[in-house]
Image (cartoon, rainbow, N blue to C red; front, top):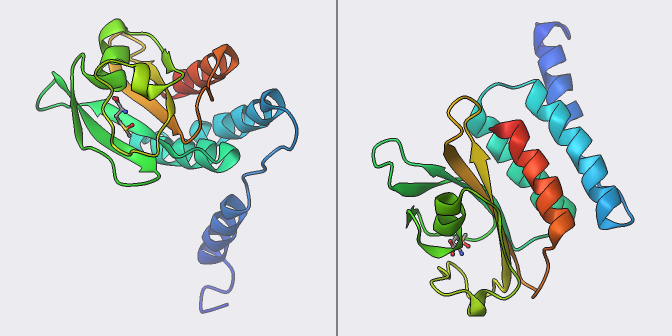
Length: 179
Ligand code: SME
């Protein structure tokens, strides 16, 4: 311990270490994993008001819990509100911008509803950021006042038919914590 003698710096260091050990991945069913994940996300998000920081942690927590191929956010661009721009994510390099109504993300934005794609090859206009992606779910985030879509949560799986209605319900709840 330095000059600070375990005072403020010690506390900050302790909190960072604490956080680093915080994600507990439940074993068991998808339901059990989501239940545990949801509680931890609610806790992380309630102690931070910066949206980008929360998106970054939520992407990391979902990604680590389920081992998806790609987990991240696209945000409605402030400078060009007809485009989504890449936000915090975990996984391989991705396309930076997606126009309104294009691809799975742009479709979920235009419909203002979750889109589940069991096989990306069967989705007309799917944007293949990675050829390893086989199925996908995109969940919109809404502004609580205007009801407008502000961003989407996009998750890609390297396997077919990964996502179903329980995923939609849980992920919409998670998105609701960020809206
Ligand atoms: N497949 C998405 C593009 C984003 S990447 O999957 C990360 C789409 O069709 O909108």
